[in-house]
Amino acid sequence: MKRILVASDFHCGNVLGLTPPRYHSKNNEAWLRPLWDFWESRTEEIGVVDAFVLNGDAIDGPGKKDSVMHLTTDVIEQTDMALEAVSKVKAKSIEIVRGTGFHTDCNGSLENVIAKQLNTTAVDDLRLNVNGRLLHFRHVVGRSDIPYGQYTQVGKELINELLQSDMEGYDKADILVRSHVHYCVRI
Image 1 (cartoon, one colour):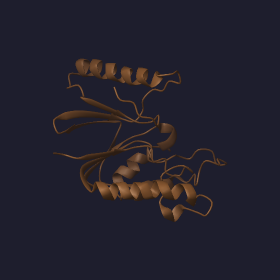
Image 2: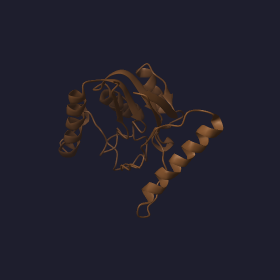
Image 3: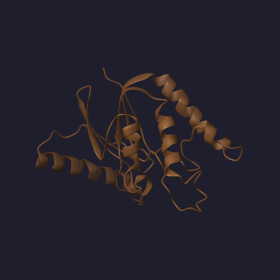
Image 4: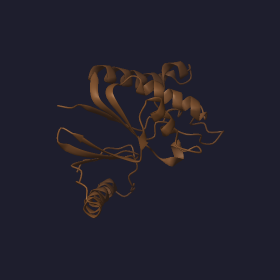
């Protein structure tokens, strides 16, 4: 029985992102510490997994230089934060799926840099067989602000998976994993 851990949208560098304690200050400790403590305790409790999938947006990106939503706009510092967060995971393999270009592309994807530091490769989408189930990971999914619109977007992903697998001749996924929109939908 294989065990996997999936996480996404760390947004390291954002004032609400996953942030290692050495980047905390007295002004932000109250909200950054609980999130970091949760991450540490959950990864410790989970123990060793067969695979860890970081499904995009590990960093928040450069944003605007005057942004009040950033602890730092230095993307190298954000990358270091993300690497420190990933280091808490005990995994036999690490898979990196690239996130949104707005957050991670700075003359090339910084998730490629993170992957290289972790001796793996960043990909746009990932197909992984876990316990006989084919999982398909991609970060970006459409968003809708209409009531129940999230079901429409995930439904489109399901239809696209069926069509694409038929046209390109690969096995359709049993489970689709998408991130990006920061809510959970299950169909």
